[in-house]
Structure formats: C-alpha cells, structure tokens
Length: 381
Image 1 (tube, one colour):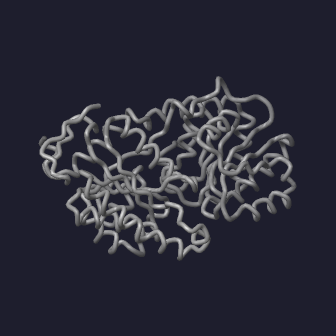
Image 2 (cartoon, helix red, strand yellow):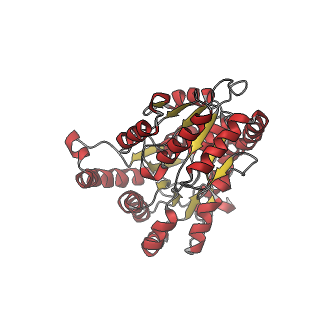
Image 3 (cartoon, helix red, strand yellow):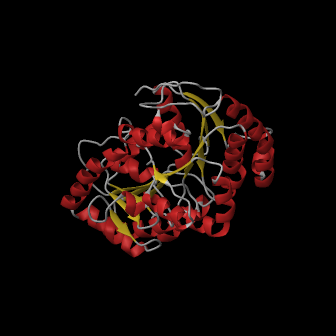
C-alpha cells in the first residue's frame, strides 16, 4: 500500500489517504507487554505493521513501568504516578501527529488513559480513531455511557473488533465500525496434523477470575478420569495462581497440570502446535487473541459462548461452544474432541480456512477506511 499526504500543517485537516498508510504521522496510544494481554499484543503488532507500510509511529505507552519500582506495587499510587508524565507525552506526541489512534478499554482504563488521550488530541486539533476493546463493555456503559458519549463526541471514528461491541455501542447511540483483530499467520501456523497420543489441553488466559481457569481445571479433571494420561498446560500469570494450584491438588490432577507462566509469542506458537485442544473458559470476552491464534495454529477450540466469541466462531463448525461456568459441558466438549478424530479434524480444517479473514491483508483496508473517515474531507481526496 502507498499513500499521498498533502497540505499537512501538523494536524489532521488536509490529509489525504487514498490508497495506503505511507507518510502518515500517527500517535498510537496503548499498552505494551509486560504485562501480557490481548490489547498489548494488538498495540505492538499494529505499530509494527504500520511501520512496515511506511507510517511514522509515535507510540505513547499507557502502562509504562513506574519509577521508583516500589510505586508499582501500590495500585492507586501507580496510576497517579504515571498520570502526569503520560499527559505530557500525549501533549508532545499530539503536536507531531496527523492522526491519533487510541486503544481503549472499560473501567478505570477508559477514564485514566483513553479519555485524556482523546481530549488532548482534540485540543491540539488532531482527529481521533478510538479503537475500543473488552468484553465487559456492556456493564461499563450501563454505568458510564453519559461520560463516554461526552468524550466520544470529540473523536471522529469509533472502531471495534466485532459485531458484539458494535451492537453494544449502538444501544448507547454511539455508531461503530468494525476493524477486527489481526492474527500473524507467519508465526501462528499449524503442525502437519493433530498430535497423536493422550489429550494435551492448553489454556492461554491470564490467571484472573474473569477468565475462569477454575472451570477449565474442573473440566480437565473429568477428562482425565477417562483419559488418565491427559495433560493440561495453563499459559498465563495473575493473582489466582495460588488458588488454582490448590484447586488442582484438591482435584487430584496437579501432577498433570503445568503452570507455564507468561510465554512470549514464539513460545506460545510452539505450544499451540503441541496441543490437541485449546480451551477459552472466559466469563466475558470480546475477540480473544488466544482463540484466533489457536485457529491459525490448526488446534480445535472449545470456548464459552460469551460476548463476542459467537461472532468469531460458529458452534459445531469452527469451534465447540459451551455455557460459561459449566464444567460438565466443557468436559463433554473436550471428550468429544479427544474421542472423535473426524470431528477434531473438521474443526481444524474449517477454522484454518475461516481465520484467514483476520490477516493484515484483509484487515488493513478496513483500518485505512476508518483513518480516512477521521479526516474532514478525507473521503473526497
């Protein structure tokens, strides 16, 4: 892709993007790893892809580690300590940018990071694309829709990864355009076929209550009752680790469960290729990267039927969906994948075909269209 930029005076007005991203000066606001997380992955990936297309990226990190280190151990102090340097970074970056792309989430992350970025870009005359994510948006907007709508009036485009979030924002009178998450098929690629031998179950979610790893453990215990050599790898970190280890002991499956901790993306790709099934046990979700990566890696997926997941996969076609918190239904789905190889191979083949909708080649034109709409008169260039 190539782009033409004309009449730029340090702001969005007069910028034309008829065919690509080259020459664009973009302020990208979002988190980076560590800690690991879907939004951090998408922020880093987007920055790299846009740089490859010739855009100049000024990345303002929302989760920069505080100094001194002890501040990071006090949640309120951590947020306040970051705030002033963050605001100053936003102000400076907005002065250099033609466009602001703000990665946004629910709760305090919206109020402390997304909203200030939108307001500062607005004050500096820079058009804003808000890229909102997170499966808890419905509850957040029930409490804060007025404040969010007031701030969103200063942005030009609201982009969301799925029809799920598009519907939630439409109910709050905020129209959104869909720009899906991007999966890296060069990194996440399938093994030649599904592994033989005992089932190897992988969960790639952080150890937090929202992701309900406890239900995955209970389902795995039921699977192991029929397949005594089955293994479970949980890749993630978080405050629930001690409780989950204790639960594994009480269920009698601790020797078969590996808490792998945080893995880099190459290690995750290798882990997916060794898996026979990936479980997403979330209680709320939007467009989980772990599901996309599992599909791209040719691994059958069992997921809870929550939030944006049924917009991403189709039950009995590209994944098996179960009710959240239902370990018996999850175990039954795991047993089906473990014991019906034709089913597992069918899920794998259809998911591999479907996931190609989320490559950069497919998503880039949608993002470019969102960028163009953010500029006054951009569509007429």
